[in-house]
Length: 108
Image (cartoon, rainbow, N blue to C red; front, side):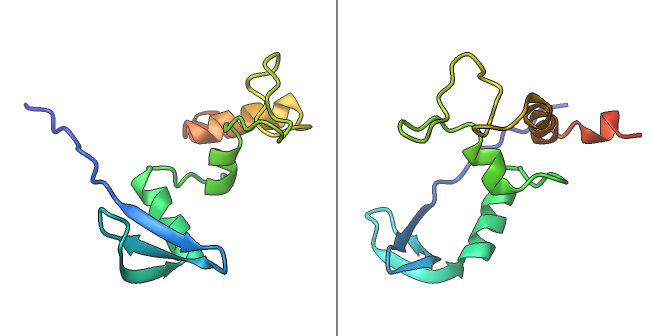
C-alpha cells in the first residue's frame, strides 16, 4: 500500500490594525481578494489546517505557550517546558499532554 503524502497549500492573509477582527484572503503579492473571515472563524480554520483541535486546549494557548519572544518574560531556558510565565509545572505538563492529544490515554 502506498502512503499518501500531504503537501500543504500556501495561503496569504492580511489584517488591518483598525479592523483586527477580520482577516482577508490575499493573492500572492498580498493584494486583497476577499472574502474576509471573522476572527473566530479564521482561528477555527487555522485549528483545522494545523490539526490542532484538541479537547481542553485552546488554539491560542497551544501556540502562544511555546513562542519565545524577547521582552515577554517567557524565555526561561532553565524551565523549557513551562509554557506560560508563572504557570506551575503541573499545568505546563497538562498542556503538553493535550497538545500531543494524549488526554484519552490518561483519563480515568
